[in-house]
Length: 348
Image (tube, rainbow, N blue to C red; front, side, top):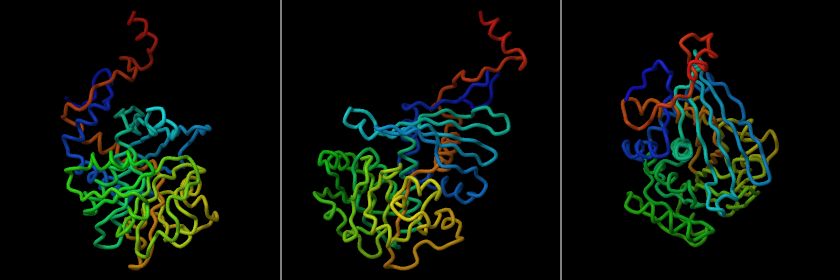
């Protein structure tokens, strides 16, 4: 199947089934590592992108958001929700779809599911941050919160950073058992823990990915030792955090896009001018990441549109000449661009 434009201006669509087939065709860890590379490539040209905080519609039970960006050649956006209450109703907390378009014509080039793809790119983003900020030789990660994101996070740091051991903890032991079961046979030493304190024992990396829409204290200051790197990725909207304020106060904080993170991330707890470093500056070598072995580094990750753009761009490239998409008749494209009504009339 080819992606060449047809007379009907068909748009490639990647369904959930085809996304899963594509991931397995490439390999889960390779897919995540490729996404991490795509994110680094796009972060390296950060200044070329349109940037805006995501547009959110908040309710008492969750949020629905649009996340747009463009590098001047391609335009991408993601529709995504975040509804923590869904888990208790047998529904996904996060669902998403995305579109990639050609800036020159305005025509869409790709329409795809992004529930799975968001999990994969979020894990890839954590791995990028860990690669640039964790202490050299870090080999053990504590995974606090063992829900839908946890397995992806564990495999990402294995694939990109060489982590060998993951120590799992969740307030729900069934979630920990699920995560351990899913990771079995995938090359990681998996340790199930009964407390967060047990999970962080011996870990040089701590990743928190909890779902409650609340100001939680998943980690307290006394739990975080010198030299640890933290990926705090669960806090992604106003009024939702995971770390005690004192951890944020003593850590070197790295963010994607400050105007968004100050509203949604761990630093929403801090003064409006609390110092942060933008991760793209570390990736491009404009500034240093970790400065000492004892430093506590914190990636305050909330997810940013450029990461979704990278994922859309990567998937668009990888589905070429594969059976992992279908063509959708999504765009009305009459023979005469001025005769849209005539096209409708003749269809009768």
